[in-house]
Length: 203
DNA sequence: ACAAGGATCCTCT
DNA sequence: GAGGATCCTTGTT
Image (cartoon, rainbow, N blue to C red; front, side, top):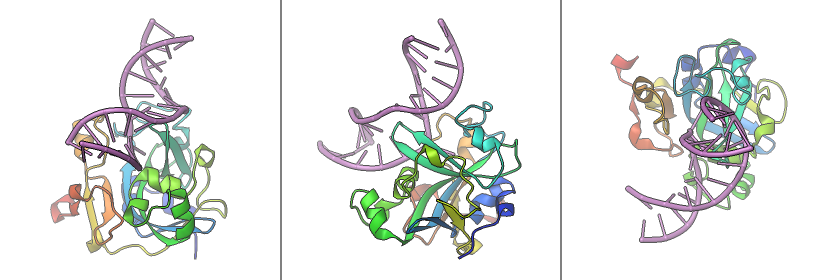
């Protein structure tokens, strides 16, 4: 299966995020279909980069198509995909996936669990892929340790949207913005209550 | 050099 | 629904 080209990522984060649904993350024997994402962009107080460039978030200011991996709460590694033009910090957080291949390895990395609890949450996705800080900055469009394959994009009618999770520190408008996107028909989605079909008015 | 807090997860109740 | 785990990043002294 084909990797997504670098040009795929060189668009606005709000365009790339929903387009990542149905795409596939590949690391070794593990292949995961993306089911839920969140967009974090420039002029967004929920984004790690909103106060400017720091050692941690520098990757977000770099070229699109690279992984931004960071440690959350001291123990969870989170995977983001950098978008937009260089100098314009933005990234898509991968919040949930559905296993396609390598379920045995995923179970091992996730403490022997099974079912949606395996992969519904950004820390779980990071664990299932065996990620850590060494993967931050890695180019996803090249052949390598971690790749992003084209898979199959979803139908617009399958998509549900809602506010992002765990960003109480952000400005009200950013907290309420519907920047979370998921596959409504999938069981592999976290915090489903906050999600609903996109209305005509919100497009 | 220090203190505060975090884009979460798991286990209990 | 609540609380602890666990440690890095950041802003401040």
